[in-house]
Figure 1 (tube, rainbow, N blue to C red):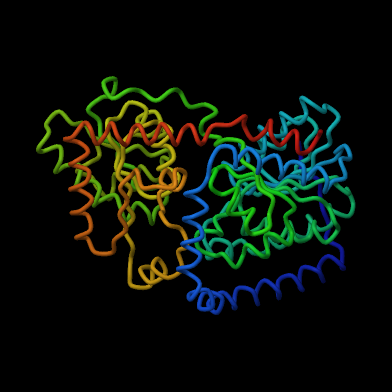
Figure 2: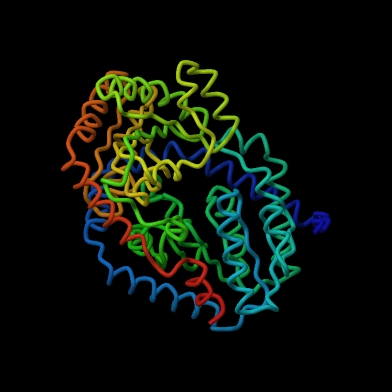
Length: 444
C-alpha cells in the first residue's frame, strides 16, 4: 500500500520550529544534568538494587493488574476503534505486527494508522504514513544526519493526531523519537501506552520525570523494570519476554556439544572493541582443549564481511546466521554486554559477560553515571550475580575474563550451577505474552 502524501501546514511548521529549539535546549543541558545527578548516584544504585532484589512473582502480577486497570480508566473504558502506533526499528516492527494481528483478531474493524516499516503497512486495516524502519539510525550523529526527515515525521504526527483523532497511541521502543511523539499526544489528552521501556533507570534517571509526564502506562519486557518505572510514577506491567515465545526448552549439559560461541556485538564499534580479545581467549582455550570448537555467528552479512577482513586468521570460525541456533547447543559462550546476554540466558548456555571501555571518559561515566547494580541482564532479572561480568579499559582486563571462562570450561559444577540460575531467569521471564496482555489494555 502506498503511503498517503502529507503537506505540512504553516501552523505545523511553526510548531516544529518551537519544538526544535526546545530539544536543542534540552540537549545543551544534558552535561549539567549529569553533573547535578552525580551526588545522587550511590543512593539511586542502592534503591535500584533493593527494588530489583525484592522482586517476586506476586508483586509483578499485581503491578501488571494495576497498570492495566489504570490505562483502562485513562481511556474511560471506551472502545478503541482507531489506533495510532509507531515503531522505529525492525525489531520494534516485529512486536508491533504481532500486536496489530492480535487486536484485529479480537476487533476486525479496528482502524490503524502507523509509523513503521513496509511489513507493518501491508497488514489489513493498517495505513502506513511514515516509513521509520528504513531510516533507523544509531547514535547522535546518525540522528543529526537524518534530522530533516525526522522533523517532517514529527510534523506529520502532529497533523495526524488532529485529523484522525485516534482513541489511543501505542509507542514501541525507540525513546529518542517516541518521547517527542508522546508529548504531542499527551497535549491533546490522547491516552499513550508505551511498550518496551527505555533504560532510563540505568543511566539517565532525570528523564524518568519527562517520561511520566507524557506516558500514561507502560509494558516492560524485563520484570525488574516494572517496579522501577512504577516508583517513578509510571504504572508499568510485565507480560513475558518476547524471546521466550519461540524459544525451545534449554538442553541439558550432557546434550550440548563441545562448542564455544563468541558474541562480540552486532555493531561495528562493538566488534572493533571485542572481537580480537575474544578470539585470542578462545584460541588459547582451544590450544589446551583440542576438542573445543569455536564459532562466531553474525546475523548481518556486512558485519560478517568486516570481521573476516579484520581477522582473516579466524575466517573459518565465522558463520552467517542467528546466534540462537548455535547457543542452543553450545557448552559455553563469551558475550559482550547487551541483548545477547538474554539470548544466552534463554538458551540456558553458561556464559561470561564482558565489555571493554575506550578512554578515560567512558570509565568516568561508568563509575559516576551508571545507576544499575549490574549490567548483565540475567543478573538484573534475578537480583543477584549468577553470571560473571567484567568491565575494563586496559587490554590486561582480558586476562581475568580468560581465567573465569577457563574455570567454567573445566569445572562442570560451575556450569551446572549457572545453568540452574539461568533456568530461574527463564521462569521469571515467562508470561502470557505482550500482544495478549495489551489486547486487554486496549480493547476490554
